[in-house]
Image 1 (cartoon, helix red, strand yellow):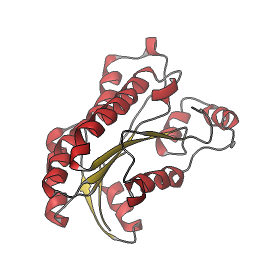
Image 2 (cartoon, one colour; image 1 turned 90 degrees about the vertical axis):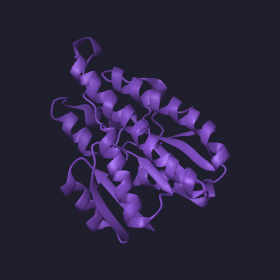
Image 3 (cartoon, rainbow, N blue to C red; image 1 turned 180 degrees about the vertical axis):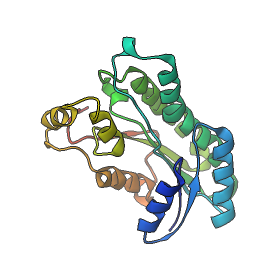
Length: 219
């Protein structure tokens, strides 16, 4: 397995590469820039010659009531959470099609896309867009044997949630109380679901959204 780790923070990408027990490279990329994404795709192709799996997991949010939010926040939320995934798919899918042996795309959405979440109106809208985008791409890419699926994480122990908790005290304890398993998701919980959808065992699964949320929502 060969991995390309992209991040807007080059040092963070390099740190992740250092933890991987496989051949990997770090590439700085701002997913809100189609030019950046195109250049990162070219670097991946130059390094490894093909792209078999695309995982879209860049995300950002700011918890606040919708009527107190401002356009500059909406634009950032939509640019990262929705347009970022559109940009990567636009540049990577032609490569997968040209390779001619299929591929896997796993987009990170959110349970807020399915059930809503107070204080996350625009984020929920952006992630809802990811779910719909995924379903449509799955239909269009099926003829090329490219699977396109979503993971919808529930509340997770991530740097983003830690950042949010600095201005929203008590949010972590409240979330833990609401989750039947009484804990937040860890990165490994999400990664395991992603690994399954990227595997051969998921070859007949496409256009689906898998919630990984400890039972917070059930459908």
